Image (cartoon, rainbow, N blue to C red; front, side):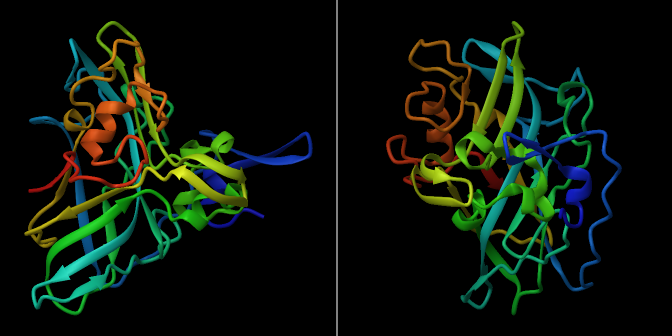
Length: 288
């Protein structure tokens, strides 16, 4: 039984006795997100391509990419484990409001693509904010993780609700979700795919015991006021230095240690290339 917005976002099919969830763009539109309290706090995000706004139009800005340029396409990411530093010095868990569509109480999906031109094949639905319950005092800093909590990351996607019903963000063959997805094309027409999720996982969907490389980025932004500022995700910074620093021609990254295209991406996201654990400050998200 598929619940809530999952009616539109996934359909099910049985193959060799296994239930597989497949995204179908032609399903009827899902219900709108549930109403949120009037005193809720929104953490607003903006996608950029360097000095310009990110966009899906054919003539939208490109970004430097080694010795060529990249035309960014579909851009989505999951966020969880939000932490707020308040003006009185206390640290409080950011309580995500479950709207049964873009966010549950544990995880939210940010979706910047509109399904047109460069983003053809996307859902067309967009979301650029995380909505939280009102904290005990004003906020002066925020931290969050890019990804899906371990237990939900490896649960059965056919039973998922809200944002985890987007199976275009799921790796069935890696038994987990794509935490961050950026698709694009280089100036010469080469396809680029950054699909970051946990890798080296032991087990199968519903029964994963561990992952050798968790690949969850931790973002911490000081001096952030959600009432007057946005969090900017810069695609140009994400792909800085190009896809391949070792000459292997690997235009992409799926989170594996064997992929040269992951070397600069891990550095920009502050991840240790060997372990996939946070190791340094990320260089992709800023507060403005």
